[in-house]
Image (cartoon, rainbow, N blue to C red):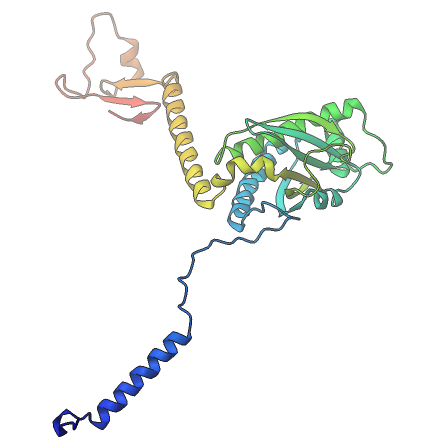
Length: 312
């Protein structure tokens, strides 16, 4: 059958059809792309499980910097000398790593933080213990040259210092979560105590403590199991908000305290009816019934002085 000239395809239409057939062939030869699946993959290190984030470590740093300031003031008053306590390091690793960094001899306090479950370790270097005990016994605060074992009396004296350090810890932690620190045991060797598994994550906080002219160290070992229930609260925003809330509460308490006690403060209240210039002779000649005219009219206000200050 013959094709009419007006029904024939132009060269441009033929090229367009060939291009379409080529694109369809490429589409068939390639498999259909699968939709991307949104997966949340987080790396997990079995040797260091449950690591704290940098933000959480930052919050712990701010908390324990606050603890250092409070403990410095408390210990200075207790030991009657200047005590500077500064946070020098905070890090995390396995409990085995924490044990490998212990410096012997030292005093180790097992501390519970009710209502949290578990214990933390408060490590006091032997040099710090020497200086503290020497101060408490009336000495200048020196490190003993000959190393000897600590007696029960010396450890009993040390409890007062430990209680003040834990008091600073309780005040610092109260911004995030109120705790009640309590010493469960005081040890001379830590290797016989199973506070955490060797592979579990532990946060250690190291303080440099200067008592008088002697510098020593103090260290906290906090297992992750102790921090896990409050890990969601370990954020800088929560710490700052908690600090502001506590500051407001303390300010209001202080204002109420001042108002209550100002009611009991005795003050001198004096009202000046008026003044007059006279001589000693005229005063000497005064008799009952004499009148002394003042410079103030009866219908005018009089001045009232409180502790010498004109107030009304």
